[in-house]
Every structure is written in structure tokens, then in C-alpha cells.
Image 1 (cartoon, rainbow, N blue to C red):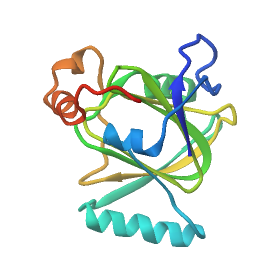
Image 2 (cartoon, helix red, strand yellow; image 1 turned 90 degrees about the vertical axis):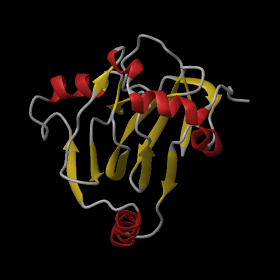
Image 3 (cartoon, rainbow, N blue to C red; image 1 turned 180 degrees about the vertical axis):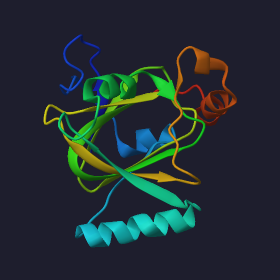
Image 4 (cartoon, rainbow, N blue to C red; image 1 turned 90 degrees about the horizontal axis):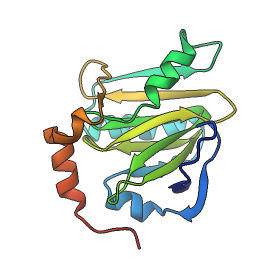
Length: 179
């Protein structure tokens, strides 16, 4: 797993943007982001995902295959995914193929970039500001998990600043900064 502070340059968002300041799994957990690398074959990984669905009462899932040739209106969709936003539900993604970057805000409102690749499972809590983009490989196939019917309703910044899920997320992570 690679996570680090985003360098905030104006380069293509699909580039690594590595500031050289690493962020550990513990530091991700401190902001309620959970990461796990699933071992074994895809079939074995999917068994772990299925258990997670049962444990967390997730009833639905879908797959999204993102690339310039596979996703209609690719350029428009990528811009939407990379717009800073929150959701009122946690977001669970299992990466089946390819790679992408999830950026999440830390306690100091800095971007933390998380590289997700095949076999990675990421749980992003409700209310955390985040965004997503592909790497320069321009392909990712991911399973998205949902408690109920599949939905993806972003609430963009600054409208989300006073959203109850965002406010609650901030309360749970507290004011501490990364060490």
C-alpha cells in the first residue's frame, strides 16, 4: 500500500503527485479510512468481500470498468469523480484490475493520496472529503458495495461543510495532526 501527502502541483491528476511524506495504514485508520490488501486468487478475495458484505449488512454490489474505451463520456465522468465531495454513506471499493488514486482529507485538511491496485479493499467513511482518479494506465475495474440499492450521490464542497455526516466525521477524528 502506498499512501502519502499529495504535492498539490498543477500536473495531470493521474500522475503520482508524491510529496515524499508517507502516510501509514495507522494514520489512515486515525481518520476512519480502512485499507486491506486481500491475498490469494480472485475467487479467494471475493470470498473475503462476501464476508464483509454479510458482516456490514451490505446487500448490493456492482462493478465499474473505467477506461477511455469502456466508460461512456469518460472525460466528463473522470472530472466528476475528481471533484472534491462527500457521501452520506461509507464507500467500499474492491479493486479487481488496474489502478487508481483515492485522495482523502486528513485532520489538517491536506490531501492524502492512496494508490489502489488489484486486490486492494478500501473503506472510506461517510462524511470525509475525497475524490478519485485513475493512474496514467487509464484503467481500473472495481467492485462497489452498497447497503441498499446502488447509488452514488456526491455532495460537493463547500455545500457539504455543514452536512451532518461531515460534521460527525470531523468529531470522530478530532483535531490531532499527523505525527
